[in-house]
Amino acid sequence: MADELTLEIVTPERMSFAGAVEEVTIPGTEGEFGVLRGHASLLSSVDVGELSFTRDHKKTRYAVNTGYAEVTASKVTVLVETAERSDMIDLERARQAKERAEEKMAKIPKEDADFEKIRLALLRAVTRLNVAGKN
Image 1: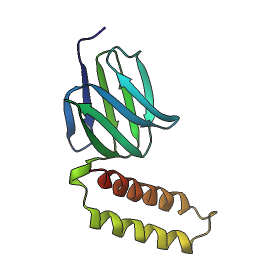
Image 2 (image 1 turned 90 degrees about the horizontal axis):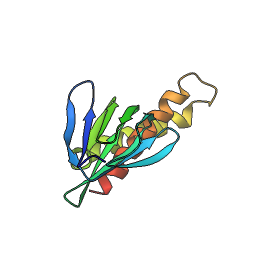
Image 3 (image 1 turned 180 degrees about the vertical axis):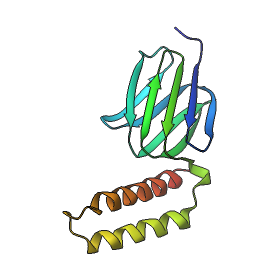
């Protein structure tokens, strides 16, 4: 079993986090899953949601967009489109994005090609608001 668990959260723009953690919870597309050191290796797709980890007995939360996670016994690498730490989320911007998406969804039929894109924008905004609210 590995002595520590290393987490890396990577976006196309930057390394959002890199360091030793006690545990990680990831929003997988097949459901949320937790990782402790010594975990069996796996690959998973990541869904829009809250990624959290515990470090020095303190929980840190990120709002993440879609991507992939690679888990080994001693390392978790999360490659996602975006990752925002809860204390860095602009609440007003997230509220405005939520309102815009809700207005667009009210005016567009479900059969429209843009409906899924608008639904995902709403999901991202709600996730950002929820994660920031836990800060």
